[in-house]
Image (tube, rainbow, N blue to C red; front, side, top):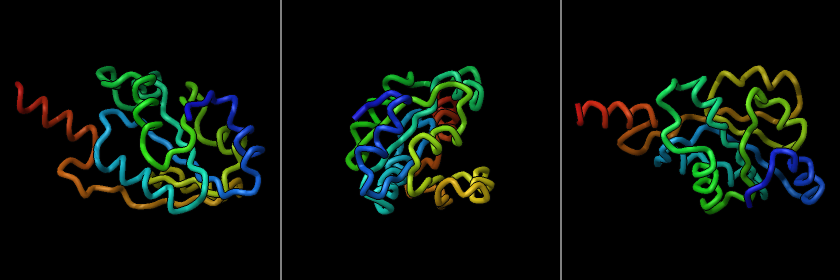
Length: 152
């Protein structure tokens, strides 16, 4: 179910007796590694919530030629994946701490070690897993580089 960022606290109220897992990412040009990551989220709890970076943040992080897929479309794609209970667009300049404080998930699962410091804050249990690279291309960036090299 697609929700607004402002509805995160309502999820905890509605599912007070369930284990809630939070994950997130850009998910630009969805690939198999993204799907593996989202499927892994389902192993940690009953309710899976996925935040999708807004276009402004993707541009800041990946450069002016990204995102390739607009945030509204990325949101619908992620929401359509089996196992995702709620998805939302992360507003610009939000970071991860406000969503954790609003949702109060039991777990925040990421593949990015830059969030290691969150463990010290004791807001939720932080799980940093491996990047999933079972497919031919391990990242959207590598897909874009391959397409660019093939068509230049």
